[in-house]
Length: 121
Length: 107
Image (cartoon, rainbow over all chains, first blue to last red; front, side, top):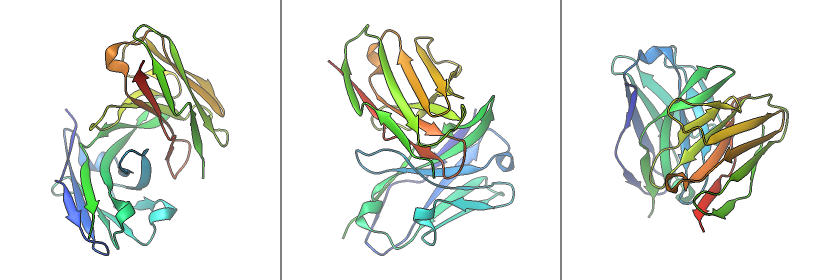
C-alpha cells in the first residue's frame, strides 16, 4: 500500500531554515510528483508547490518563491522541502501529498502524516 | 490564481440531519473540483473527485455536484463520524487552491 512517511517535528528560531522529508513506499517513486501543503494552527490548507519525482522539475507558489526549495532523492524515494528565513507565521503542520490522475481530474489521493514546524524565539 | 470560497464556515447539525456545503470558484473550473474531509490531528482524506465521483470506501451518504463555478457537497444522513472539517480544492490549474473549510459540529 502507498505510504508517505514524514520526518519528525521541528522547533526553529526566526531566520533559520527547516528541511522536512517525505519517504514514499508502495509505488514506483518516479512515476508521480509530490506536492507540499501546509496548515497553520486552526487555519486552512495552503499549497506550497510541487516537484516532479521523475526529473526534479518544480513549480512553487508565488508566495514562497525564493524562500522554498523542493528536491528529491530517487535512490531513497524521498522528497524534501526546505523553507528558509523562517518567521513566526511559518508555524504550521507541513504535509507532503501525492497527486494522482483520476477520471476527470487530478487529486491529492495520498498524504503524509504531517510534520509540525514551530518557529519561536 | 483561482480563489475558492466555501460557505458556511461552520455548521451545527444533529445525527441524522441532511447537510449541504457550498464551494464557489472565482473562475470556471469545469469539474476539476475535489472534496476532502479532515479530522483533528489528521491529514485530509479525499472524499470526492471530479465534483461528483465518490472515492472507494466512502459511504454513499456523501454526494457531490456542480460544474463551472458552483459546487455542493451533501451528506444525506449525518453519522457521528462525519463531524469534521470539509475542504474543497480546485485542480484546474496551478497554484492549486483550497477553500477555507467548513467545520461541521454536533448540535
